[in-house]
Length: 594
Image (cartoon, rainbow, N blue to C red; front, side):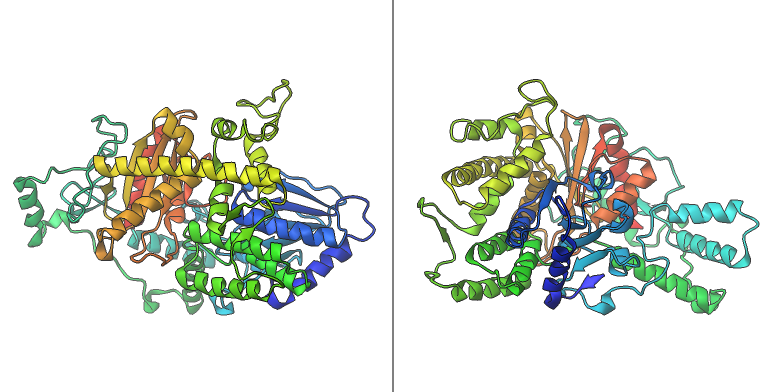
């Protein structure tokens, strides 16, 4: 259920009340691996400590880990920090008598959480969406599965004993699928249906966009095999003449069959017309991901209502907000509004000194962006980079870690990402010399990672590796061993993709009709997989669009049978086996062309 912003304190008081008469930790904190989550959980733990409520904290990397969890009988309340808003929490966690409180910036909210029928899921509402934005409650409020159309077709073909209503609904689904039949672009730029012609595995470039002089097609694997993704056409006069030949009347076999629109007079009944409209409303609601208010700002709102909005909590909220700004997850208008809010909070603090920077007794002084970059590097940098940066300055920081699954004494150890989470958590407060040194070394690693991103981005531009197809651009990279170590994290690859988008937009190239989503594909040899990340391409810096690539990725993977091994909270990231990448890119083009 959506919990009103002005009543956050009531929900927290319920957590405190439920902790009475428990003999152990009654609160479980599940925290995602990002800076905003760490800032939010730092605020939340200080509130729990003030109320003498025992808690346990577990970093989580993805939904599979969450689904595999079991909870002791002592756990009464579970907080999900930047994880859980986009899934059916009750079903995923297999809840019994626990109550779940979700503080998550990921959107869209799963409707099963909004219309919580079990009374166990509380969504801290940032009031970023009006009530009219949510489809009405019903038995079909869950996200529609990718295989639903196929299942409907199978039911129509094989379940001859279905009642009349079921048969009519299946026919409508089939009609919609037929009318929305996916088209693909052949080498001449004309549209052909999927079942016409031979499929040679080529990914066809939209030759109608010649404004991007720096873009040229290259094979994914660097070879010339027919089943590799590549761009066609060499810009010769013959090709141009061939392209221009399509300006007149097209050949009969090239004209796609006209689509038959579903009109109200063709619907079997008014009820089924409403069913189709509702289905489309739900599909539209789940189409594309975006972010709401940072979790740290919601946690600070709770602290303020409890009269605990101290200076350190203001700073933590500012760090969470800055993380969204740095990652381009918040638009300029909302960011400026929240900046003004926290400027007022700073001015209202006693003896604030009139500065938005944090100054410690150790004479360290950083802005929020410095802290975000440093913490992100501690979370994302691989072990060998962290070891080189920390060994001489904080010798005990990496004690017990190893490159394999065993610790230095041979006993099984936790994955390194769990250790890096606690490093970042220790570094954020800057309350001791050790934490300040950790953060300083994190900033040094951040500079190293950013240099690698810029170097790789410039190399992509110089080599003209970016390929334009009809609905998106993409580049496929074979990273060197050093590049793979530095840029092999999904967040680092996303920064590289955003860097390339920013460069082209500032050059006036990827704007207007030339703006298109950008997909970056990187071969990770250590795991023999391809990492795929997708970002939007707003026409102006500071604008934020819904990212529909996550839905397109899932559809393309489902229709090609490619299984993603990535388990995280960002839907616009996939990890595919190297044998699946060519057909995935081709099918992604078909999906976005539908």
